Length: 228
Image (tube, rainbow, N blue to C red; front, side):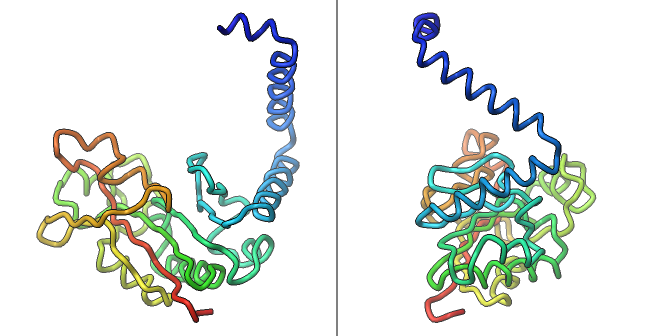
């Protein structure tokens, strides 16, 4: 099949052009790469409806979602947000394991920033490591200064502290997945099309044989209609 496709001139020409384009982008000076990525992101924002943004996507995003990167959409920099969006213009935001690398004060500021740019009726889906997970090995992996691969964790939230932060920013909060302080797991059915969380009960491949080896606190923070 592969060899037969190569015999098709149009197909071969298209593959060559795509490879050449990718090479050219990667060969650009960093400043030009940055401008190109900003331009591409801006074009997607202007042409997408509904407008759904993945914060800190790291190349992982679902169909109908626009990935973003900290270099041009930093949660803490208001000039980044005002460059691409009008207030009350975003339908949905998704952030998986992002708030845990912010301090508590930064997390509150970031939540308020998101609140300003979401439409009334819009929502922000957030996931962070779960500070009430009953497995000590998990806690050692995700805690501040722990042994996990991410050495930039600044806060280890539980469902209470994360919910409280987003309520303080003005949101109505709906908890979707979490452990409570007694080690009991709570789960509310949620739609992956509304924002897939990979480190979750359903989608983390480390959860086998009925054991919840890796989960997150997951919530939807809703901007209720009439808010601005």
